[in-house]
Length: 182
Image (cartoon, rainbow, N blue to C red; front, side, top):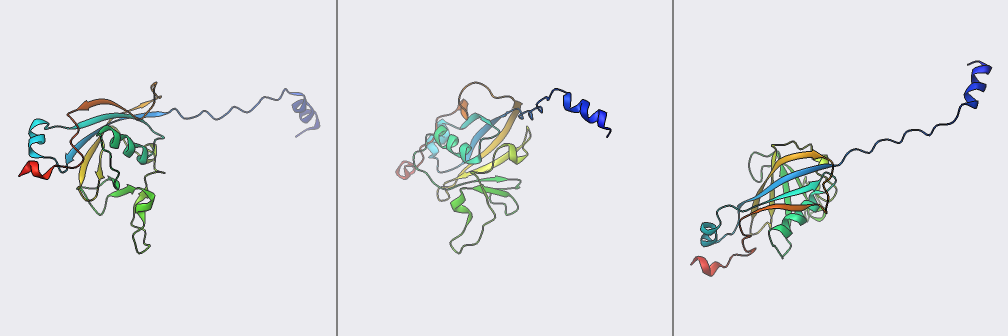
């Protein structure tokens, strides 16, 4: 570079570098339907379909989604949970599994193959509209849910997310009254 060009460059006004444009937030519309669980036959006859539709941001974790589902279905007693992706059936050993960090290590100290739901965001999962995945709550009572990705949009709507945008059916009691079935 010539001395004249260097002097000219020194006299040029300094422009700040353009800041990297933040990625637009993505909003996921998810339908969470109860597929099976300890539901009394009388309740099932009265309420054949039970689902909740949510809006959640892409930076929400699967743990955030778990908490929203827990509240939306009027549950009050926390239990273990797991999200399953890519399996052909519940408990498919080939499915990617995500659960609470404390559940990822078995009593013998071995990693169980699950990923941390607290650190895994919706954006990190590579979801597309039309995808579905599983959610298993309470490993003893076995509440199974199917989550359908209804839409993915750019930009966050107003209000606090995740939020329920639609409710179908009454929430079943978390624990069934076994005397009712007799």
